[in-house]
Length: 187
Image 1: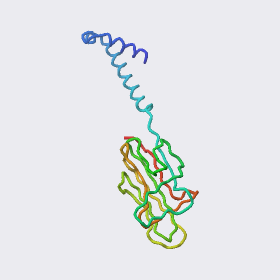
Image 2: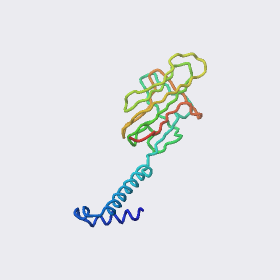
Image 3: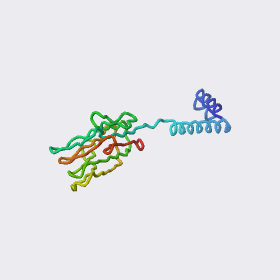
Image 4: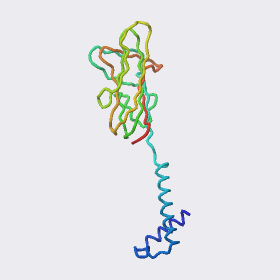
């Protein structure tokens, strides 16, 4: 049927408008079916064969120690990359840059001893959008907190993490403090 459709369309290219109007009903019906079939095939191709970008990252602060600030907010750079599909996360700066417009899910966790307040703040294009914090000190071991957000990002938008002034965050090789995200769907 596809071969017949292609032949019909090639024949149509050789007709002028008057010849198409003078076609018998059978030829005209066959031609309309052929054109409809080709539109359907194109729709299937567009739906299933168009590559959806694959974007996902996960990183931890890494190292073995405490990150603390007493003088202003501090950029958090998650250097220990667990995955970086699509290469949109920069472990040298700690910044994720959206390679395509779409809806992304982002998650972050923080761990710290309870002798000093803890925080981690998510920023989109330099503006604070979500945080986790433990402001009451207890001195009883350590605490872990997490948060997540679903965000619409334009191509080139950035996501980054910061530590609030007078707070701390801790990590080691067990990846307690993390920053991760992935593309849910392009827009």
